[in-house]
Image 1 (tube, one colour):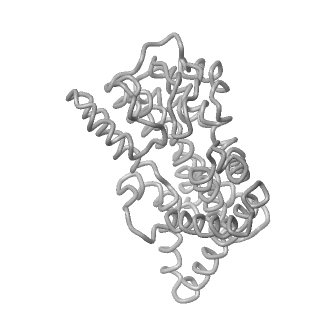
Image 2: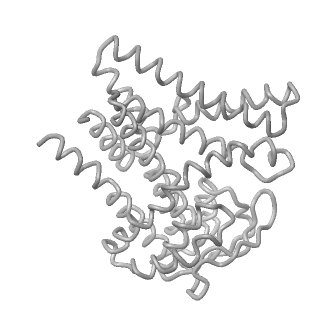
Length: 330
């Protein structure tokens, strides 16, 4: 139990402090290359529809988890501390919160200096929408929506699936760490598949369906329990937790994603801003409904407030593992 809890706590704080370094052998980048390779192969065999997409999901999940289990077994057999360091490395690599702050903060800083060109350059590092036509308000909305959505996708869901894997193993009286990281990696595969092939374009609408739906399923519970951590994060950040909860319950299903609207609507209410609205993506214009419609548009100061709020919410979410570790040690 203790190594299981120490790994997730150290993995979180490593990401929170160091961030996500760019290097070619990053586990998530390796997953991305694997997706590209097998996508090309499946399409060459004429499997460009839902069957091919489903096979892609099964192959990438299988290759990823098998590779992790094989490597961690080898490292643990050679020298147990090296195996634990490898487990920590994989866990750390599955979080993507600090890097998000690193890219979003310059957006606010550039806007405060009336430099919308640099703000758009910084924003383009983390969003999939077409930033060419965004004004200052659109840039602010996009930055805050990305922060809110990635609180779940880049942090809370990996944490949830790590704990779910460990708890499931505990119930069956198994070793905790390998199932925990396997579950965590399974989520990262789903998330990466969604970001690479989960588009609603003619090329991917069928082929990417399985990956996109798996991502929706795996984010389902984390998105809904995000309200708990965001409530206390808003309270710590001295914004409006009750208003966030009210807006979340009212607007959480207005988003075209079954999950993204939860964190976005809570954020809109807690910051007293509106999000959503007509948005240009790579696949065209989407007339998204307004979230927090009665509130004013956000500005650069609200981006800074959102960063502080999401950081506080993430720290709150780490309290249960920390508490469990203290109980296990005592």
